[in-house]
Length: 405
Image (cartoon, rainbow, N blue to C red; front, side):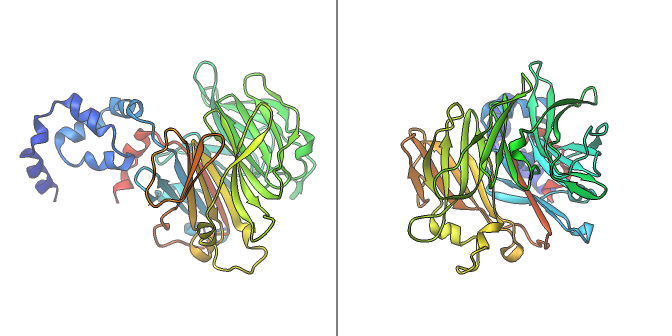
């Protein structure tokens, strides 16, 4: 087959194009398409595999972040699975076994990295899709299910922030322990101890009860999914803002998301008449004022469930998002973890998407909803599902050898 492709490429008119023009064209391809392009001809393989290609592709167009889903089976480790959804290509990939076979207690992801805690103080990280896993020096505080984020210091060096997470004492969870913020420097393999979470977030300081959003690389917001408590950690001053409450009328539970310099709230609301709806709000981070910008169409919300009369069915509804993409999914196994996605765009720049439900808001924001394709079979039954959004550097895809399988 490779011979046939090579022969066809040898006769193709694109070989008359110089390398610079070919590189420009290929730089606009979706991530996995760029990998496939490397198998077309020797010229394309040379261009795509060159270290400078990833940088050129990153400057050519902004690629949307991927949606990652990690399923953990508490009994049989080999049943753990990890998947990544590329919104550019509109398809899932099953991630390499090494991603899901790590014997972790907790798993998370952000900013181009996977994160895992192997024990109470052992913290590991790996670049998305390609590893290898690296263990840090021990955490200063034992943790379970912390919030994790990635930001850049003024010098451009990557830092990891770890916030909250339940602490175990004598095998029991200590719900009263505030757990200080810790910031990790990969270059020096050292942890910096910072001020703890505000006391209003206790009890329930793990990612099971909290969501987080990194705003403009400067503030790390922590938000109570059920309490609606919110506070921001200033990454340059290493201080917390004052505690506030962000709860639109009728809100049952919600998740905080960030897109550039904007904050969004996404959550389930009671309605005066009829069933609950899943709504989105734009939030002014300076005043905490909010305005509804749209709601998930009822037919899409119903497709996430297989029953209409279960009062507790919405409890398995989760939400993650980044850079204008909001994913809502069901962490229950009954439909193999179905998901929908909303794309938030400026009304002036939003193209009319044919046959897609959309709403416009007073803030000139447009919400366009659609289903996410099913996960690639087989999909195992998980005891816990972790999901997150993250940008994926092109070199991560190019170096992940088994993505073409």
